[in-house]
Image (spheres, rainbow, N blue to C red):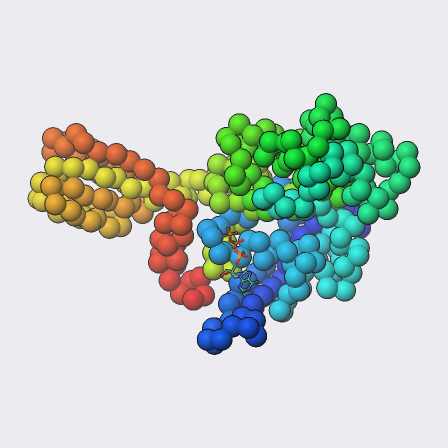
Length: 328
Ligand SMILES: Nc1ncnc2c1ncn2[C@@H]1O[C@H](COP(=O)(O)OP(=O)(O)OP(=O)(O)O)[C@@H](O)[C@H]1O
């Protein structure tokens, strides 16, 4: 039975595709871009869900469709039980959006003036509005600086104000599109703490990010997206273990006979050789890097390093591994 409010899923996306057609002004004919390709995604009410993917994966396009800024080409999308195409007003009343970057704040105004303006736009006025503005200023830790002009704010403070703006009308779903982009590590950590508090008070959150650590810190489930397609959805710990299969061991001064032996080991996906006995080994199974290291040490090789690959590298492996299974 759906909880109070009548819906169990804050986000319900089914068979969603979105194509961009290059504009008329473009002289040379360019092909259409399929930004989203048959996406299915559900986010239960109250969950903090991460959408993790490399540049151009389709994360922002999905956020824009969920927030009624863009129309789907095909498929259905419901937010808090409402259709994003036929119930734009209803959806907008229930969502708060934070996009990365500096746009969207009136920098000559104070934080309080900015928030009062947005509160008025969402239908709040008078004492109710003033109390609500004070409450969100408190929640994001800007009460002491509420009457300073926004142009005097740091990047982290501006992003907290963006969050306050998104919360002023008490949304049911918060969409955060790479909200910590460009922040220094301390400001990013503080911002994540804030998002954790907001979600703790019952708001559903959909967060897009490039950053696995951010996803691990905040999300109860994470969806990996690439090339407009969903690869998998799982708990961040499970994805972390899955990603840890793909380690990279680099070493110098490796005799070619030892490199030959490494190449034969189970869980070694590829081995590249360079002059000076330099090698780069890519593993594809959990624990394989430990065997590679032991083999190198036994052979007297001591100059080596182990790294986890970037997400982009993992995606390449996954798409290679699954071949037709991802539907290419
Ligand atoms: N207005 C547009 N016109 C044409 N192509 C577009 C447009 N917006 C997005 N695209 C294309 O759609 C694809 C998905 O873009 P999107 O911005 O959704 O990716 P993203 O995952 O948010 O990437 P990033 O992490 O870099 O922000 C990309 O190939 C992009 O070039």
